[in-house]
Image 1 (cartoon, helix red, strand yellow):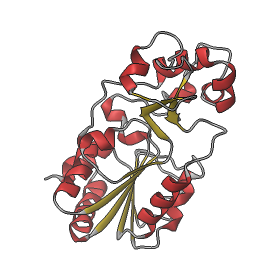
Image 2: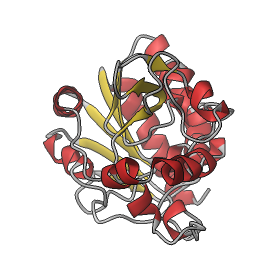
Image 3: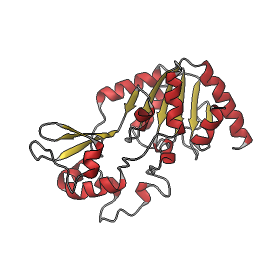
Image 4: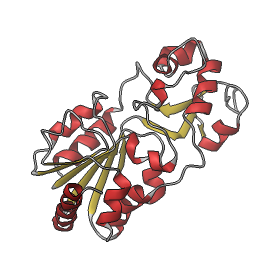
Amino acid sequence: MKAENMEKSKQLKEIIKNSKKICVFTGAGISCPSGIPDFRSADGLYNQKSGYNYSPEEIISHSFFVRNPDLFYDFYKSKMLYPNAQPNKAHKYFADLEKQGKDVSVVTQNIDGLHQKAGSSKVFELHGSVARNYCTKCKKSYSLEYIANSQGIPRCTEDKAIIKPDVVLYEEPLDGDVIEGAINAIANADTLIVIGTSLVVYPAASFIRYYKGKNMILINKSKTSYDTIANMSINEDVIEVVEYLEK
């Protein structure tokens, strides 16, 4: 780690120690060390060839799901499901802060459910979760494993209707209750730590503007357009930062 980032991490450690309410806003970068690729980097999902005559963005849209559920699920199961992924040090660090008595809320753009697996209890999933799935007709719930192990289009055991992931697809609105909870968590936090996101996905990225405190810290490998707004920006791998915080 660069000396500059070590000094910033030292300051962050002190900020966390003195904070009562912490909100962690996370993007794909926090889950990359768990083996889940991000979306927008050079090797990310959106820069990969989909193997279809459609872009990844088009495939994971609501209209495509309705028109071509077979192709949707072929792509979804091969590119977006990682049933064996486990929380990494970063997920566990913030869950452990909660166990130590800190009031920690997590607002995440991720759909992988790793914050909950790590033990965080207050998680606002802006884009839903692959862990929840439901029948489009009778609303019966199904697990991630059921979807991952299904052949072709996953169908309900009760009425044979198509099962849909509880994931916000393109063309679909975010859940109002989740938005309200996320904004409240951000607005009421002493400290806001933004991790592993390029902050280009809206409206989610705009939510951090509700933070009015003095401790907005951005941790991301590359610079973002919000770096000048933040009180501190650490352009470093989140695992290296967390390993420093744990010392």
